[in-house]
Image (cartoon, rainbow, N blue to C red):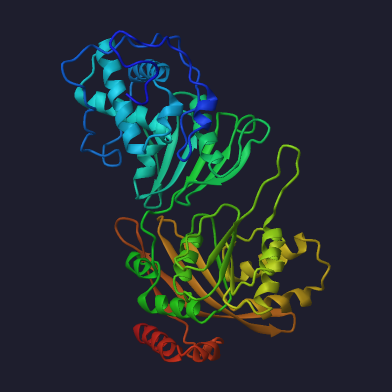
Length: 499
């Protein structure tokens, strides 16, 4: 076969040799398994002569995502280690890398079936199928993580060393029976993930932010900083991108509130999305960008590229960490400053964490209406305080009143997202920044989320209500874009529900 080493004639098998790491590096697109420590193991004997060429067994009809996960025995991992070692000694990874993923998977399944038959391992059909799937994932994918990545209902994957893997489903964290062979396998998979985006993680650089091809956010912290083995955290993105209409179905916002948000995105309000960790800020930002006109030039700046805008005219920028010599770092502030020279119509900053907030505010205030960003904070008022603090972090020696005037002149709307104690996510505030009274920034809430109690299952019950503001501060902007009637109808419908 194409992926095997040596001749194909019966009785001619090349002596076993270890796969080199350079063979892995030759993979053009998909990451391949690096050479891992393995027990001494002879290559499998030559394939028995058959009257007809052997064909790879068809994959199981049960997908990895739907197959129930169970605790695997030590014997299973011992068998898998032996089969994996024999497989690595048999195939040529540099040749395997040239195959299409599905063809390569069939090739591996075929060889593994031969190894199991020759070594006479006692396995049931289901165990053999599970072993085939695991080994294919180890060679071609992300190993034990593959079944978890395939499950769309999982929001987060948290790996605490080789033996403990947790997931978040429906806002609740639970432990899984998934585990890695050892800490070295876990670190190898982490290195495989981060190398795809040109980053590295090892003892010299033990902290790394990266992303998967679908935009899912990845954080790795390796020994010696992580004492009990490498800690890997993946914030998964759904395959089907959420829309505001779907958020309405989930109860995150009311239909009338969603209409207000659509108008805010459409009429080029400068928006800051505020919320705690895991509250859904990036998801909400993705939803709002769907209402940007397709003719607008949008530039996104992120630490790891997560936003997936549907407009045709989008430029995506990503920060870069320093190299081994501590040079070459490109910060978020560098990206935002450079954006201003790229003729953007909207600037979107995935996550504002530091002094780059000042450059974003300057952009909002100098003709780039409709710019957006997210900030970690627990309320709209705290969000404003955080912006002031981050400006101070940049070493700007501006009077406090001047800083607040810049904020008022730049930010139009703050949208607050929150993860409630039952695991659900809600948009709790739609708040306008309308001006200053003395040295105090004045805000007004348009929409609030009221908690009314909880049901017998512990799920929080509540509803979104209008605060009675019939003419928001961005009314003139809505009228300029011809959206004032829709805005008035949405606010009026929300008030009638309260009445």
